[in-house]
Image (cartoon, rainbow, N blue to C red; front, side, top):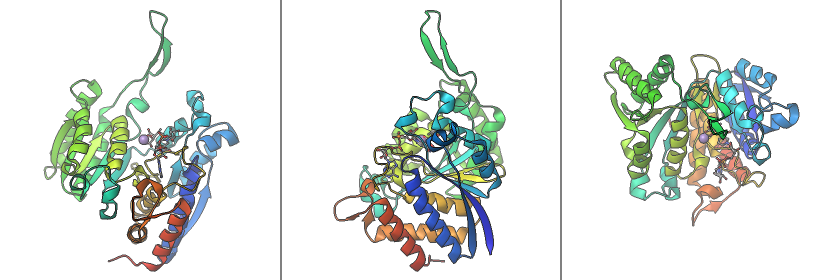
Length: 365
Ligand code: NAD
Ligand code: IPM
Ligand code: MN
């Protein structure tokens, strides 16, 4: 049988709750396809700060680097919000992405027919939306130098960051985006702020240059403010979106709400080689942590992306995806996607139903 080592990083808040569900889903779907997993659970984020004093211990990073794939819950929480920058859970997450060199973050947003009513948009606007945000993940303002705190000429405090992209960073994410669009519906929209920012002017120039390698893909450009508006005006116009680190962060949260809830959206972060990092796009949700209220499906679907994009185990991935649909078809809803007429369940019960469905439901070939 095939064997893989998976690093699990539960993290903080609802992270451990949703990871525990995703782990059992992986185990079961794997075993039905002759796959054996060796799990290594490591501390990360606030949990690692409390345990070791740093948000990404060296042993966590090296374990992740040596595994076949990494599954992360979420990090962060009030307790660490006022920590110095290098001692923030979020800094650990950025170090992990950089350390794994996962520059391409795929964030699909699909409106499932079962959840059209959970969207805050009108049915005719939300129905049928199926888009993919390709977010650059290891560059831009998140990492640009110089950055820091200082004082200006009036001796007033200032904080500053730098949006910087090198041509090769844009070229490689653009190629991933064109390839992604090719496997989807052949349309790519590059989102930038090229009317104002130099980094965006270069972004648009390089994406346009790379487009000559993909004559079959229909490329368009859009300013990010307009894109934010178009996403709620008419989201069906989008197929694949490629954008920088910070715009991708914001637009993917916005896109999640079209689908009903941020609790539904998974992601895959990939590099040129080495293990991929798979995580829901949501955070540690401290407002509902420890109450068995979290929607585990974003993490369960991230586990499916791990199987598909990380390990090439398409069949096991399909088992998980089919089980998620099956649980929704049975009428189960966590609070974030609940509406009248459905059965309100907690994280654990949703997890148990997904497991039952993996066991009993064989996906269509
Ligand atoms: P958040 O995504 O944690 O929560 C936003 C809202 O969505 C909250 O009301 C929350 O209850 C809800 N929500 C999120 N996930 C849910 C789920 N699975 N099921 C049901 N409801 C869900 O964003 P935030 O409140 O801005 O940030 C909280 C903390 O998480 C911060 O410390 C932030 O830095 C961190 N964060 C971490 C990640 C990550 O680990 N990748 C991502 C985003 C935010
Ligand atoms: C995300 C989060 C992170 C990001 C934070 C927690 C560093 O918002 O994964 O979307 O901004 O990338
Ligand atoms: Mn985010």
